[in-house]
Length: 83
Image (tube, rainbow, N blue to C red; front, top):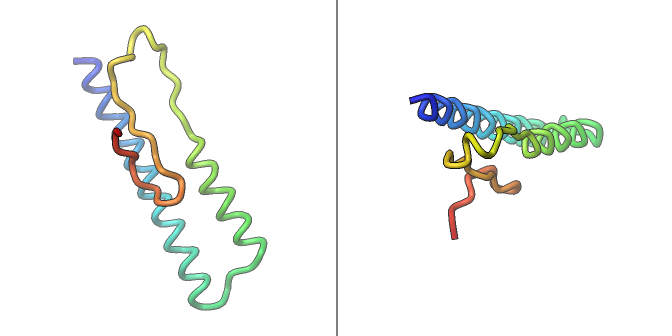
């Protein structure tokens, strides 16, 4: 039961990161569309996306090793599928 709740929270966290990354990408596109993008804004957006990609949750392996946490593909911001 506890594992199921934790798994749901981790899935919600992953979804939040994906949604935020998508929204930041849409903001970047909007800046480009209206020619408002600057080198500084690009650097900040890249930094934000890099931080999101690097954000991880650390759990003790012996207790939660069976909970799948999807990895995110950096360029597409989509979950990586198992090979």
